[in-house]
Length: 135
Image (tube, rainbow, N blue to C red):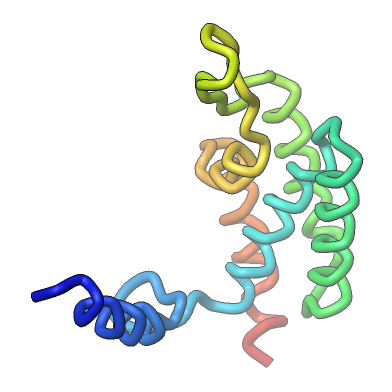
């Protein structure tokens, strides 16, 4: 089969994804908001002004649409801040300047939700907000 014939099928298949994690069920809103807040908090802790601004804007959207007590997010922000202070930034070797590393803050922040202290704070926040989101 030629690539040009295969491409439309791939586009259709890709368009069928729903952002789901298992069994075709979407991620619960509470999980989306809590994990998003953790990632946004990480972006706010970066040195680049653009990332700080994007993180702040993302966190603002979450705070405006969230259901429940805003204080629940305080522990997440603190855990993320402690984790980012460790300086375990994701890096990649650059091809343009051999022997040098390029920091990947967006990758790092997207994966910060899997760090055990941050994941524990996320789970605690989800448990605290579940009833508010169920309404």
